[in-house]
Amino acid sequence: MNNVTIIGIAGGSGSGKTTVTNEIMKNLEGYNVALLAQDYYYKDQSHLTFDERLKTNYDHPFAFDNELLIENLESLKNGESVEVPTYDYTEHTRSDKTVYFEPKDVIIVEGIFALENKALRDMMDVKIYVDTDADIRILRRLIRDTKERGRTMDSVINQYLNVVRPMHIQFIEPTKRYADIIIPEGGSNKVAIDIMTTKIQTLVKNHD
Image (cartoon, rainbow, N blue to C red; front, top):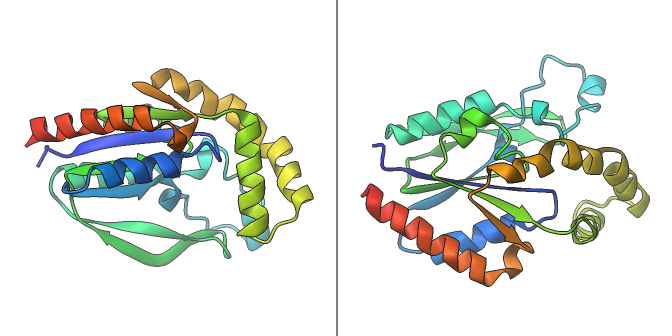
């Protein structure tokens, strides 16, 4: 079943990747589409002490188990269902629970490092980078983390300045060069999303 279309959507934290993903999925109604978020594939850290796990930098490529993600995508392309891992953010390691995932016409791989790994990129039919100005991204992150995650403004700003921003500059921003299309301003760019949806529809029809 090599007629699976794989779409990669990358971009910095707060860039609007999720909004773009949701818009594309909504516009592809009628097709068998599913999201396989890269965040599902944080590495298992059960071999580490809890204090050691607390030091994990989730904004570094090393935090992700790309080998398992690639293995799962290969199985899905071959028409085989997979068990997708889940992550326990309270224990800072992989959960014992998995999610049953069946092959789809279109699989969207979304994550900050979706375009960072060459082997993963090579599996993608379309590579998208959501490019949003840093001031917008930090404001979105600030609102999300204070309102939804109960964090203080100081902690969010400190994490952004000391971890998120330097990791973005070093690892995420450079992956823009690998994108087939760059979408400025995320989910508010309806024209770019419509163009991408049309392109994806054409790919899916060609794979049928």
